Each structure stands twice: as C-alpha cells, then as structure tokens.
Image 1: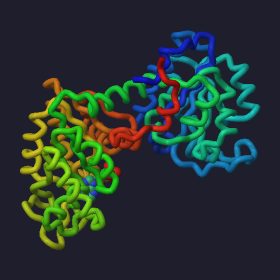
Image 2: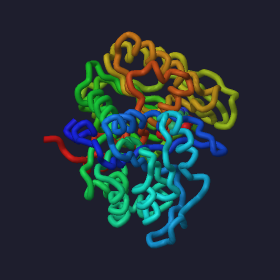
Image 3: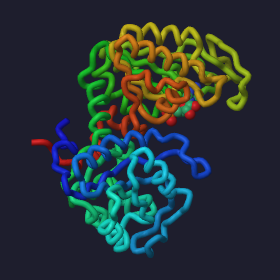
Image 4: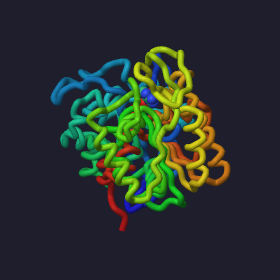
Length: 403
Ligand code: AMP
C-alpha cells in the first residue's frame, strides 16, 4: 500500500488516536455481534505494545440526531446510541482497564485525557455532534488536540469524508491501522492482481446500486454471476417475463448495455435460469419453477441456477461475492445463498481465494456459520462496494503517503 501504516511511525510515548468502527448492532443494550470490536484489537494492542502513552479510541454508533454546532456540552446525547456498552465489552477483550468519557470534545474531555491513569480511553459517540458528519474543521481540530498521531482503522466509514475520518488528518500525522491495511490488500489484490480466472458474484436488492460496480468490473474480470433481486432487471432486458419480481424499469436499458459491454469484453455473464416463486412477498408458500408467470414473484434462485453458478465458480481461482442471492433472511428463500456460500467454503478449502464484501453477504456468511471458511470477509459494506467500484475512499486518500 502506498499509504503509511502504524508500523511506519514511532508511537513510543505518544498519544495515539484511533478512529475505529464500533458501529455494532445492539439489542436492549446488549451487543449482538462484536466482530467490529474484535477487528480493531490488533491495532490497539500493537500501539500499547509499542509504548504509546495513551490510545484514544473514537467511533460513531448508529444515527443519532446530533447536536448543532455551538450547542451546550452533552446536548446531543441519546442513551440508545451511547458507546458505553462497547466500553464494557472491550475491557475484558483488551485485558486492560479503560476510561470511558461521556463526550468526545471539550475542556472536560481534554482534562480527563490528560490526567487519565488508564492508557486506553474510549470517547463517546462522535455523531452526538452534527459537526462530525459535516466534517467541520473546528470539531476536527478539537479531536486532533487530544493526540499526537492519528490512525484510521475504521474501514466501514472510510468512504465518508467526516471530521474523524478526513478533517482530522489536516492536523496530525495520519496513518492506516492494520484493519484498513488488510482490507486494502485483500480487496485490492482480488480486483487488480488476482489469481485468474476471477469470478464476481453479485446479488442484493437493486441494480441501480451496482451499475458503477459492474462497469468497473467488466474490463477486469472473467465472469460475472448475477442473482438476487437485481437479476430480474437483466432478465427483463433479455425479454424474459419476470412477473411481479423486483424490477427497476428505468434500468432495463442500462442492463441491456451492460450485458452488451460484457459480451464485447469476453466476460461470461451468468443469469438466473430457474426460480423459487411465490404469489405474495410475505408468504413462505412457494415452489420451484423454470418461469415466473404473471401474478408470481421470485425470491430465490432455483436448483438449476445453483448448478450453473457452481460450474462457473468451479473454474475460478479467485471469487469476490457481493450481495445475497435471495431473501436469505427468511428460511423459505435462503437456500440459494446458503448453498452457494457453502460451495465457496469448499472452494476456499481447495485453495481458491474467496473474498466476501461486507454488509448483507457478510451477514449471510455469519448466519450460515461459515466465517472461518472464507479468505477474507470485509468489515465495510458501503466502503467495500465503493472500493470495488474503483472510487477513491476519502478516509484513505487523506492519510500520509509513503516515501
Ligand atoms: P442489498 O442491500 O442491495 O445488498 O440487498 C440485500 C437485500 O436484497 C436482502 O435484504 C435480500 O432480502 C434482498 N433480496 C435478495 N434477493 C431478492 C429477491 N429475489 N427479491 C427481493 N429482494 C431480494
């Protein structure tokens, strides 16, 4: 990577501020999935081992309203978005007492950081201040004033130019943490320097979310496998009846163009050929069918499609997967996503590189208990999508270059 990492700077005796992604799911104050917390540990532990005087952690959690600029301290606090449960969860993982502060800027925070006997400090939710998402320079400077070195390890928000991901880099030496470094290495190699053939599986709800991605992928990949809700717009573009299935009418022409571009580039485009259909989205009453008659909609790929996808994937040395292949949240329509995820696990066992984009595909892999059976599962849904689209992520672009 051409960006500096925490290994390129001397943190000994320094106050190191790490932007982490502790945006974890909470139910009744309990963390239901702590992967993002565990993913941050290597960077925090490294900074401690290297003798950082303080490691100050900051993150957002959810979408609180946020207090406007100039509001009194604490005005943006909303208990359901507090990072306090994360502090309690983090302490035993780190095996280190930590100090949790009830805000992230202000003179009380400054004083508490200065006199803390704990080396690890977690600040309260950055988004209790509107200034965070506005990338406000005064807020960014206030955050920066707490530390000597800034480390970004929040891959999940690297596609956003916020005060804690972009603005702060104007005031401190700024480097990447291990998680961002790892994400860029795996995602970057998969697309730009893969073992070939390279196949990409795309699913999820909407074509419109994936148009830029497909455009960027066509010159780089050997095969694109399309399933999920987005497949029906492509099928429609080929004149196939899709009944009441998810369809973006205004994207049928774009789908046709993408199919032509792929054909011209020699990229194998593989679409759904049979379906799990139902008369009502809310019903689990369904059947397998080669067609989607009027009045029916398809919520999963059928068995012939699964075999077809497997044949294409079997030829690949690298597979990148982004988006579920059906309504995997419901058992009646989870089969296609599960069987393909299980097949990817067998390919991984045979030495194929399998990269799973974040968000719903990562949730699906976790639901089926296959997390340890993939090469890499990205921690960033939107960020991994934008990276694979070939876009520059502002939170990474802002870090110091090597050399
Ligand atoms: P995305 O947010 O674009 O990754 O889309 C994920 C969502 O797409 C999941 O919640 C799935 O339930 C949904 N999805 C997948 N396949 C279908 C389908 N055939 N019809 C409707 N929704 C689908």
